[in-house]
Length: 165
Image 1 (cartoon, helix red, strand yellow):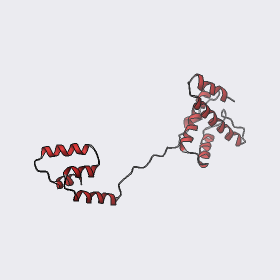
Image 2 (cartoon, one colour):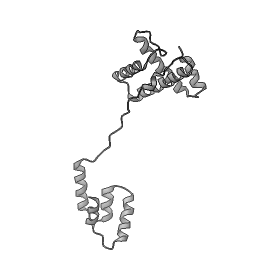
Image 3 (cartoon, one colour):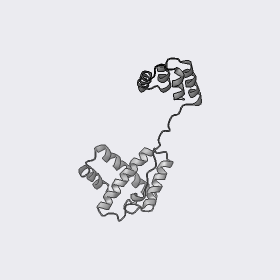
Image 4 (cartoon, one colour):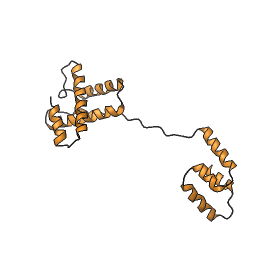
């Protein structure tokens, strides 16, 4: 109903790319199809936040990726803001909607066996520079060991191992 005017608004007023316009139009049409499937005469103009939440739950139940759901909600946010700005709705239902959280990868930790192997490797090595490079695996370790060597006349490999453990 108001979709074509909204797409024109995106193009002219907000200078959105053609990809954004197409994606938003697809997402809003999908939402309108969901509303018509409910069979209660719902349209974007007369729906509320509970209907939007049910749509999000339905998308998630169907296996829609979180990033896709977030994009669809962005489309609806823009659309309902436009409708509010145009005086077509009294209240923006999207103000009460929180997008699902995107998954973040868990940090990677060393396994206990890997730590033990590293300690064994350190104990075998006698060259202080090699000890630090092996233990830290960083380029800056070379600079640190050179500084330590300059500051101490007799450097023992065990001194570096104790500092690292």
